[in-house]
Length: 106
Image: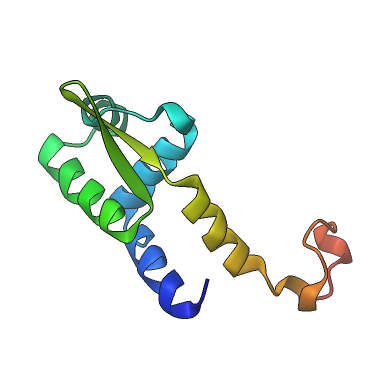
């Protein structure tokens, strides 16, 4: 991943409602959530949630699949992990991030 790839992902997450929705989908795991369940969990109106899910989907952090008449939204864990890897690739000058924070001389 390069800067040009990471910026849209970070921009999509740089809004409190979108971040909350994405985190809820991460917690839900591969099973995902329907918009109705997600809206209820977040206490968010359906129209507002739809707007934010569209932004997350456009960024590639979330995808939706149809299950009969229902839409199921899921976090794209590969994309999320790629972003996390990009953010930590040069952590502590290349020393693996598994070291305790007190051992890291960043």
